[in-house]
Length: 187
Length: 226
Image (cartoon, rainbow over all chains, first blue to last red; front, side):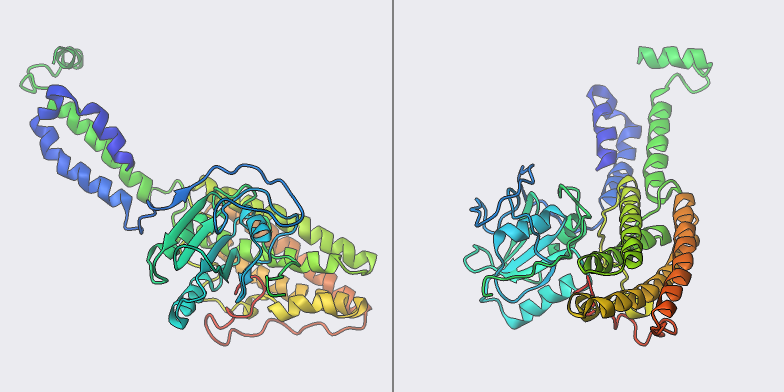
């Protein structure tokens, strides 16, 4: 990527026809590809522009389902694996601290659920819970970023976690995601 | 072309290079580009993904996070002033160091989290980490028992911390070595302090860290790792 910015601006007019340039081009391209690496492509991640961390008690209506930012409860959801749906307003506070919230339709297979559990195993800034009514089988949400997936085997899951768990989009990245609040909708 | 020739004259290479300077300029530019790109990937400037320094920063951030967690739990309880001060000291110190290590990763252009979970392949109990149940016990035991439990969990946690700091000491990155040394010194001193506090309370001082039974066996049911 970076190499492309250097090469392209000088490649104008007759300069570009230079034989040396032409011979060097494959080398430059190889370098560009090498610097891109082989990460799963996160181009399909939708981004948002929530800035504030305003606190508000009670139920909060969100535009996105699951939400990706905005007002939230003063308490944050304790990060971890849940088998019942969570209240949005607590999970949003966890995302403000850098949590990635992985949600799935309750109809996903046991195999898929096991895969998702393995993905978050050992990662302290993650929430995993069912989310009835979401439009895709699996959705990865972080503050201001969301990726909808058809499958729990999607190779972009680790890539998303790598980038967004305590990621740069979280307004208070690295603040604790442990806490006393671990209530679900069924409690 | 004219500019190239002018530069060529000034450099005294006009005819000796057959009057054609462009190939040399382009080659020099590409050579610089090559050095720059390769330098970005293997250069010694910033620690790279997978290096000792990066692994240390991420692992220690997690380990410190649990020390803060244990301390926040005990601070909710009506414990003695001495234990409260210790818990406050550990909280502010380790939280600051978590931020410091996060700052490195940011400057190094690396995510806080990374491709693998922190402390991957380590037995977390053998590194002094408390289990979820042990963390929760700080909320449920009576205050006297809870403060003893906190001291016992924290002495193990510090022993693991000192052991894990070894990675930082071996990293070869000056600021990482400095922090690792600070952690070893501070936590070694606090281990002695906590041992004294346990003795004064007539409580058992844990003998030492359990030896790592199985690789990665400590992953499930750990505080902060699920």
